[in-house]
Image (cartoon, rainbow, N blue to C red; front, side, top):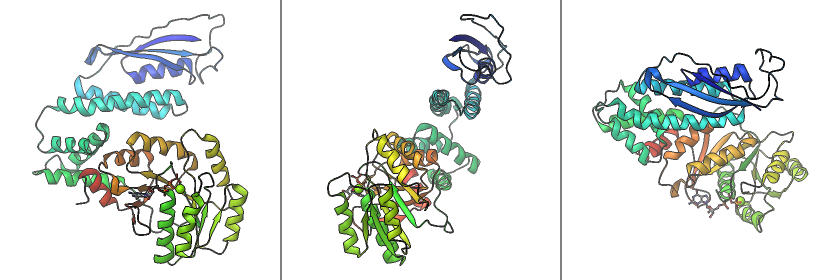
Length: 391
Ligand SMILES: Nc1nc2c(ncn2[C@@H]2O[C@H](COP(=O)(O)OP(=O)(O)OP(=O)(O)O)[C@@H](O)[C@H]2O)c(=O)[nH]1
Ligand SMILES: [Mg+2]
């Protein structure tokens, strides 16, 4: 293990030195910032396994170099005071993150640092700005109260301020500007997008997968006049298949049970002349990786399905982001948001939508089948996120 210490005026410079000197395998052990403003110095201790490859294009190591060899590279810091400095740090963090995508560990460390810094910027920064800025502070507080994370609330506010030139007479003007920023960030599937014949619903336990399959079946069969069949892959829970069968019988739709790859292929063949196959999957807790792999494998058929991740609006931001990341292996095409009727804080939804960067296809808002489902409407969702209501 080779450990070295670097100093530079900016964290980005220090990181570049690490990368150039120790290569992409280097691990940052600690970071420290001393001094403020022009006197700020970033100290970074990094290590690299001696067995790791030398940096691409870097200097070859001197033969005979041995042991821990601390090295200090000091450069004259040139920084600005206050908020500008924090902003610059943030920009540096972002560019660093982009450059280090290949190192997961480093990526996570910087993501955490970035969050902390953004948090600082959005609270302390706001106070640093000092001046009274009409309704903006009220709007900012309102967004936070609605469950938005501070960095996201700050981002929306900045964009709204910019768009209006910072000049709004009334609170409502600022809120409308914020709502339109949020609306633009919410994507829905395009009207022209081709819909795959096989549609699979995945998601954590109890989010409403089976109920939503039934609602969608009714929507497509009764309203869109499509020839619909149902398939359930849920053979894990007792009576899980029966739950869907009851809906299938009521609607007069055929249903197949297919717990694994071969059975699924067979079911797709059986329903060859159907327009649409809606596939329900079992909910699994987060530790069941073996099942996730099995399901992923089963869905890798010749007929590429469209996959939708269901997230309950009653879940916390952390739980939703965790599910979004865990189910990321399925490369899902859209989000279906469930239980809007039970949600009283829509702020975290914005964080999720912005992070996941997927369109929202449907929103469910009650237990009743078939009526409690609607196509996602960005304006409505933006209203819920910014105002807490659709109006
Ligand atoms: N309030 C409300 N309840 C819902 C909604 N959608 C589903 N539910 C309820 O949530 C519970 C779970 O629904 P399921 O459809 O069985 O959920 P699931 O994801 O299939 O569950 P597992 O298969 O066990 O993972 C049921 O009581 C549903 O009635 C909704 O939009 N609003
Ligand atoms: Mg189910």
